[in-house]
Length: 517
Image (cartoon, rainbow, N blue to C red):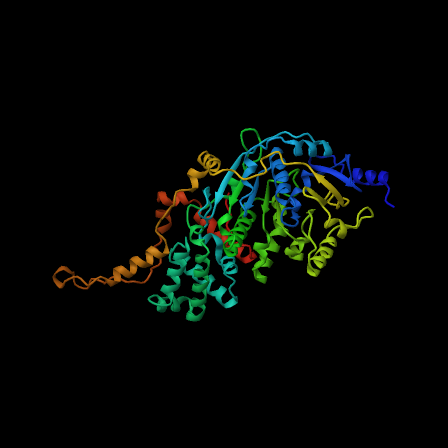
């Protein structure tokens, strides 16, 4: 029979840290909530990633709120993917009520209503600051993986990027990529073949169809300029609190391709642009991916491999990634093994498959003499969870049944008026919301075709031996670089040459993305 005193001693030793930590709640032993065994997570290990799982309505979103708002108070900014639209309330303080007062008294943690500095971001029609990236910034390797192309098709994409680099055809949005594909299989076919070989029309057709499929999920709003700088995710407000950026994704629940495209690009961009940090006293940024199964359920093996690679490496950049999903089995084992913090809310056993999944979920947690984990998972109440984390030495803490504290921010959605007010006072909307429509591959190729289609001038108006317009793209002259540097548009885009060089290096590593200062 488990002993209460030995339990208290075990938990107090496992959750006592010399460095600052985030308080989550108090331990529950055989139905008794023990205030003197408060459960916390050291800031030092928050970049070791995490998982919040549980059935619908079990309290996953509230746990996410607790983590994000407590991190903010320690100056740690976070990025939240809001699929269901229920995270916006973190901007406003919660009102004290009887249930919250009772929970606060149970766990021994004072309740102080408080909102947070929030920036709303969007890749769709939702209100917020626009998130964009160009096709060129993806690089051929990452762009091919997003489209789930085979080696032959990926090779053609790499050659197309090289062709566009050589002939100064900027690939900004998906229309540019389609225009180049059409050009090298029609008017520019001979010229392209002379330098790069004959294009397979079958491969080009497949790539074109994959791009159209991505367009149909709303990707036209994501690809383009002005590109979002991930450094704007790492900001603090005037009080030193970390700013919480919320990507509003409620209108793309049925568009997993677009969601995974954005998420993978964002992770690759953060990895490529953030400097190596090693083990920091606290992370630079925390990323919370709600409804994480949308990322993995339709991902190819190549795409999963890319995600696994980034998750393994991004910790050294001072970034922690947290997946929120219904069952731990939604997360691939290779990713699950990288997650230091695990918060398991209740699961329901309605079918034989459910019972099997619960047994599998229980095996993801450390062995304990104090709980029957598989049985406990099905009996957890709302706002309760079993938790294990990493201590300051990277060793897993004892598994513990926790009564969680209540979030200090609103546990409900904001009104449209409140969202509009927050968007109106955004510090970065003016920078990113304007659409920059500079001349790119599509316009350049279209201009060449229009020039070639013009009827020749009358004989008396034409000088002898005047060459006729050539519809083929031509390589720029040697003085192109100097002219570009003086161009105000180029200065606005910023560091294009450095970005392209770095993109090539990252493509060799299979990470894609771009690097900024």
